[in-house]
Length: 275
Image (cartoon, rainbow, N blue to C red; front, top):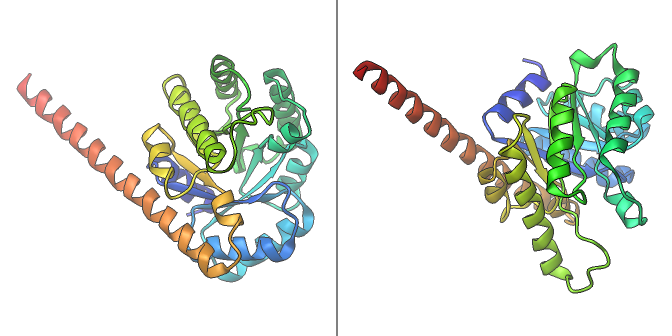
């Protein structure tokens, strides 16, 4: 089974974990530690910057370990995403996230996202059917606009959307753990509202960790994207421990969803037999 098909199966069963190396992380030593930890802990996917050295390193690590982990490349530049697909044969691409723009005082509108998606699609059309395409929904947009954008992306046959928790840098009342919890709360609430209004699978990201992951799944996430809780660690042993715990949470959710589906199926059969 291809790596992308294994990811889709985990996504459909709501037990997928994407480890995020970082859209701006080009420190090859750190990248190697994160990617190799994700591989050894059997994460479902690894998301790395769409940069030549990073992609070559990640592909080599996956190949040498004969891993089933799905490789995703992230960028907000369509040409970089296209090169990741057309040259480096990644399994998936992510347009986003947009936090680096926010830190520079910039914003991202729905129309800008659609324009970037259209440009990316035009550059990868030869391989579009072979890869998974995920798009980040800007967390700074009002939820009504997030829903509208997600519906447009659904019409464009995007495979997956990713949420983010945006907190204005102007909000000086939030700092430390309060800022961290607020961002997690926002991305989870965005997941909940989006899951009620669209059919696309949702990947919940922004401060998702072993504490907040269960809430993300409960809100309707099919995938959790975890970066900061792993990237801030200094040892591979620590990274392995956190990723393994996250995988345990994801697998537990998949088992619970399977039980719920089976119970609904049994109830449906019972009702049919009574008619």
